[in-house]
Image (cartoon, rainbow, N blue to C red; front, side, top):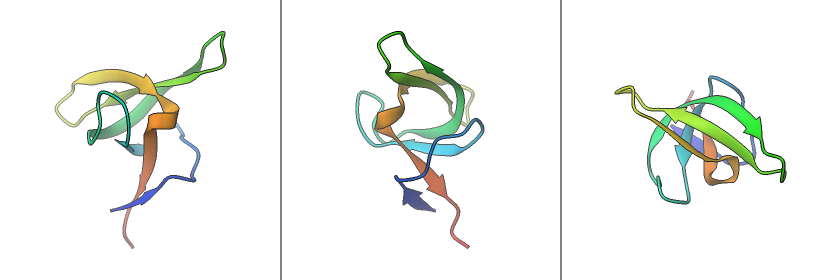
Amino acid sequence: MKVNSSAKLKDGARGKVIGGVHIAKTGLVTDISTSKTGHVTITVVQRDGDRFKTLAKNVAVLKSAT
């Protein structure tokens, strides 16, 4: 899989965390929200069912190699 950091995050997209506390973790992007201060947060659901919240700026969209 290739990383496409310029793509916009969408609900259900595969993402890889490239910064912050959860660096190098991957999963499905869900629950995209914008806070009162304007920061975009997302929830990432890993394959094993674990969930964590992170800032959208720390996530790159994974694009399948075709």
